[in-house]
Image 1 (tube, rainbow over the protein chains, first blue to last red):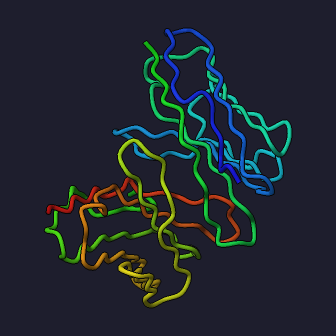
Image 2: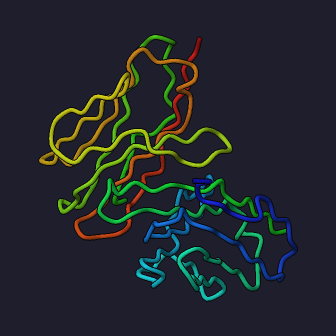
Amino acid sequence: DAGVIQSPRHEVTEMGQEVTLRCKPISGHDYLFWYRQTMMRGLELLIYFNNNVPIDDSGMPEDRFSAKMPNASFSTLKIQPSEPRDSAVYFCASGLAGGRDEQFFGPGTRLTVL
Amino acid sequence: QKEVEQNSGPLSVPEGAIASLNCTYSDRGSQSFFWYRQYSGKSPELIMFIYSNGDKEDGRFTAQLNKASQYVSLLIRDSQPSDSATYLCAVRYTNAGKSTFGDGTTLTVKP
């Protein structure tokens, strides 16, 4: 398996622009997680899905952030409008219920908002 | 108080020494405990998991869990420069699909 795939790997945008991050989980996994990592705040869980249904979005910082999972093989995280404080590395991870509860992380998207 | 706390770093040990990384958690309902390693510029990867009290060994790595004290640790024996990374402790609560991560401890192993 190719592992969790994220795109783009790097994104540089200007304040106010819309940003869409994409994730393809490992085939067969039923959990999908979106994280944000910064030096100041560490690894923060933004939202997670189980069988394509959002379960907990309490980590989503504000209404500018939204996430969707239209099917088992694709998810998006959108920021509109983007702000400089959104600059971070965004990780997508997937996992399988009933296993070791391990999460497999994608390579991340490094977002820079100017 | 954070839900998962790790000893503040950075931690520096000489090559060949034992590195000890510690983690405490606040929720007694926690069931699963994980150690992830994250190299600079890379994504976290699982290196150890433990569910029961006691020790679990895997090669040079030993995870120790004490649920009464709400404490989990990771020991790295015969530390190598390639072990230099940030180590993240993660805790999964009963019936929860998600895990909560600590802030991580950065380990440097000096040749």
